[in-house]
Amino acid sequence: MKKVLLAFILLTGLLQTSCSSDLISESLPITNSVDVYVAGQKDNQACYWKNNQPFLLDSGGIMGPVANKIIVANDDVYVLGIGASANPLGAVPMFWKNGVLTILKTSLSTDAEEVMSITDFEVIGNDVYFVGYTRKTIVDFEDYSLFYWKNGIQTLVHNYGGYAQNQSRIKIANNNVYVTGTNSDNGNVSGMIDGYYTNSVFTEVPNSMLNGFSANNNEIFAFGTKDGISYYKNITLNSETTFPITPANGITDMYFDNGNMYFTDGSNNIYKNGILFDEGPISSGGIHDFKVLNDNIYRITHAGEFGFISFLTINGVQTMELPNGDGSFQSIYVVQN
Image 1 (tube, helix red, strand yellow):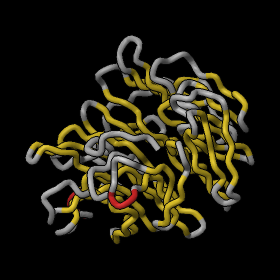
Image 2 (cartoon, helix red, strand yellow; image 1 turned 45 degrees about the vertical axis):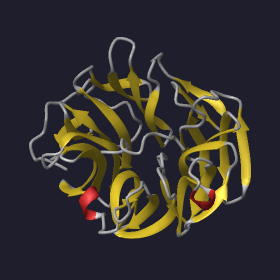
Image 3 (cartoon, one colour; image 1 turned 90 degrees about the horizontal axis):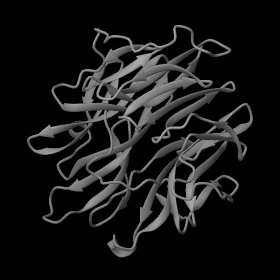
Image 4 (cartoon, one colour; image 1 turned 180 degrees about the horizontal axis):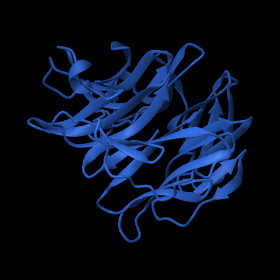
């Protein structure tokens, strides 16, 4: 679980007018027919690309919107993002379904709980889940809570009784709701306990930093670091595995494909079943997001040696690029045709 400042956590509508293409290669280097979606920002506007064709996302006047995660389900395109408000100054979580913008800070807040951040989302069938943090509006001190929402209905995961700094992730599997997060005794946020929640029931993973969840058939995995090295836990079987690689980042993302486990350590490397499989090009930024489908590798890389540049590569072939100042790629989703 990556811990960042709560006020800066997420961003992402569709204008019928497309922006200019950032296409590098007309032919996608894949072995079967897929649609490749990429979410990010272009020219200071939230944007997503479908098969290298970009479309701007309407921000409703919110400043500096960025699309941070994209999911495509049942031919619907869901995008999560964040922008900024000038008055009052603060982060504004945003969401689009098929181009229709919803300001989550408004739609999910109540008289008692103001939404401060939405850190992740999940789509299961026609149900949309969000996870994030709220601040109580009826008290004078900073009192934050972790919630998840299913189709707008909120469920309390944990009340911190103070300021929280977690970037929680959510996964739905076997009719259970899994959320990465910390816990605290008697509201003591200075003594946080690392772990995850299952239907709001906390499981401690000592000395860990969990970055998310992955599912393989009916089994659910949590991944990240533990005791300073790369780590994952099969929650279903209650078994733990560690790898002595990149202690600083641990496992930052994990996917299963054709019976194989793929994960990245946040550098340029992708591992298959625990063995180095794909050593990407040298880049100071490393892998920002990746997906695996039918043995094809889709990767977003951020480079920073000569300015911030985003690349999309498929099976090692560069297909899109956004130079410094033009924007960034943030999230990939691949749909089999």
